[in-house]
Image (tube, rainbow, N blue to C red; front, top):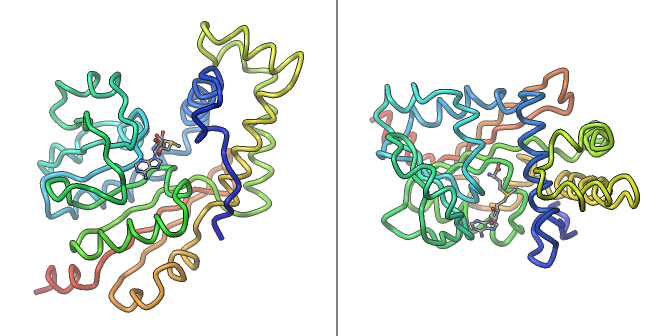
Length: 265
Ligand SMILES: C[S@@+](CC[C@H](N)C(=O)[O-])C[C@H]1O[C@@H](n2cnc3c(N)ncnc32)[C@H](O)[C@@H]1O
């Protein structure tokens, strides 16, 4: 369960060209293979069922993925909901980008997913980020949400399976043919050197992809993590596959039974 191997993408000492390149490739894969769209139904349903005015995306990075999953803001408009993005290391660029949006905003201050301020307590969504949390932190995030009678939706495109490992190998190998079209021009020199002369960039991408797979929490592992608390919770899991992502994406919803009872009453 959730291997403690490190990811280069989580390390502050790793040069910026790698962080930028990793981010450029994540977006490139979303845009090219569209597997993020497989989450749309689960995310829409999650937003539609929200009792508060907004949902919080924790560990949101630049906040680029969630709007891509929804494609348009119709579910937010119809249900009068908003999405608040947050991260331990908020990005100024993202705060600026969403400041005039009717449906999205980005928290300008640091929000630790384990210490969410009371004023931001609502249901939380994690996109491609829950596996970054170690078991102790992941458990605290889930228990805090449940205690405040809120739900947690965990969306992941990695899984701990042979097919997923092979997908990561294919993804990293693609850098050799796509690099000049994907990375930002300012990083092209270093990225090209560390791809075509010394193939460090694809190796680091492969490492991060494989470690993400090893760190992925299955539903069984989440239940094991929560131990006795399981009795008070409802779990739903959806897995969808596509031709380009045969290992599939997963959506795990964890909600307190108390909430179910309140809704039924
Ligand atoms: C893979 S990245 C961003 C994923 C993003 N949701 C996406 O799909 O592009 C993971 C993010 O988790 C954030 N993070 C890590 N630990 C955190 C914590 N305890 N609380 C809040 N954010 C955290 C990091 O700062 C980083 O931006």
